Amino acid sequence: LGDKSFFDASKEAIEKIKSELGVETAMVEMGTDVTKYYATYQDYCESGYDLILTISTAGDDILKQVAEEYPEQKFINLDTDTTGFPENVLAVTTKSSEMSFLAGVVAAVKAKELGSDLIGFIGGMDIPGINYFLVGYVEGAQYINPDIKINTSYVGSFVDSAKGKELASIMYNNGVSIIYQAAGASGIGVIEAAAELDKLVIGVDSDQALALKDSSPEQAEHIITSAIKQVPVYAVDLVKKAMNGELEFGQEIKLGLAENGVGIAKNEYYEKLMSEENRALVDEAESKVKDGEITISNVYVMTNEDFENIRNSVAP
Image (cartoon, rainbow, N blue to C red):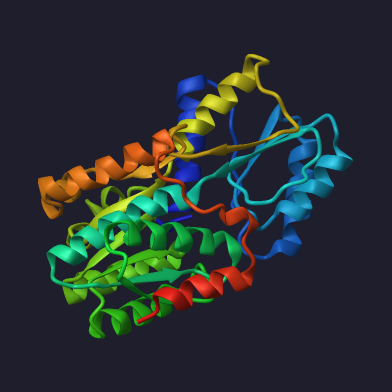
């Protein structure tokens, strides 16, 4: 927690579930040591909860094991790219490529306004789940500018903000006008670099400008938008349906722009940094994705070689 992004959004979801649905909740922060996850899952299963929510793909293999060992326990995995869960698990996949497509549109139109055809992407790790963001970002940018170049780098961690800041500083100093970061807490470093060098950055998973508005206003002012997973919105909806016996477990659902599972932040900073004309281009692209007029590549069938080819195709 404290990443001002993905995991803080899950905390907000729990808080909304408690306040809006009036249920008793508990939350545990399991950290990055996967070997400790099993005992935590087991403890929660033994504690009599009607429903257990999990988030992130890191514990998916353990979740599958525990769900099989406790077949009467119901689980919702609020965001995963994994398949093949037992019948007592509802698995949610947010279409990160769709929100990232809009991030690419924003980056490309702003770069064009600034007289640049070079933008950047910094991921937490070079793994499929992060490269889904990259693919959408590339295709969104190319929708605006087919000749755009994208400098790509990976931190190698989701908790190393110093490394994120270092990589971002290198990119910015080499002519990159705007960076989209999908790097968890490492992305905080990217935002710091943007503020210090007076550059622009696109946040991820939560409205990061809003999250930083009070504590770091100078950083918030450099976040042109954020690609958002609407976890607090759909988590409440799914738990409410579960409470009413209306939720079908044992299925995998994908939530994108059309389902209000993802989107981008259109806040005061977006209004200030994006011209009316550019905002109209973003709105048009968003409508076309929702209506199926724009089809984003199916990232879920892509291989590591596919991701490498895409990176190379837009490399400066």
